[in-house]
Image (cartoon, rainbow, N blue to C red; front, side, top):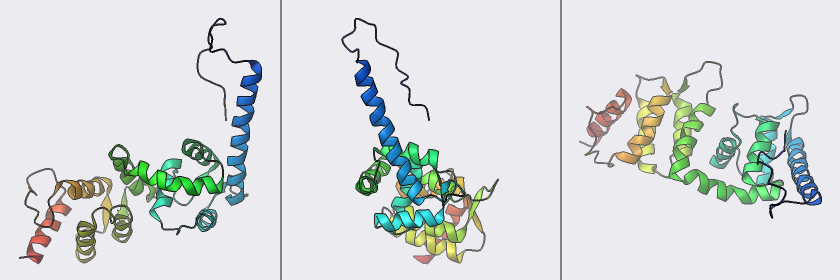
Length: 227
């Protein structure tokens, strides 16, 4: 991984010129930091695969003191920009840990609450929510996720913020028979619904607006349920 600076060199008479010794120390510090990140990666990696596999992630969770299904592990995958569910490549690990500013297990553990705060920012949350869906696309050319997995995912990523809506949406998804899978557009609209629609009265829900049919059906089911 190249570590050369992309900044233009300062002119010779600039006061910002760093001595060769200073640059050497800086490069050594960066190299040492990356070595520590790599050592941590190797302690969980499957050597034959050259990446951290589900067993490695489970061991990492155990050492971090969090459950394998904890939303913070999904947040970590988002930060690493992990492309394949249950696997972290070395490049993903390096990029993610560098972005978090951590190079040890203890620092990673301390960084988890900060990561939660980062994900919770409105500028990041929609991206994380979208990533959570895409992370579940485990087959090539897969475009949708089965209802059972969607129910688990809704509870994981939205349950804390929108508990009443999520509980009833999950209940509806389990009893309805029109949909076996959910696509990304429907998934993103679940978040929009939770954020925009008054609940449980649903007074501002307008079926003539651009809502997917599954949410029209959900609202109809809700109104019948509470009539």
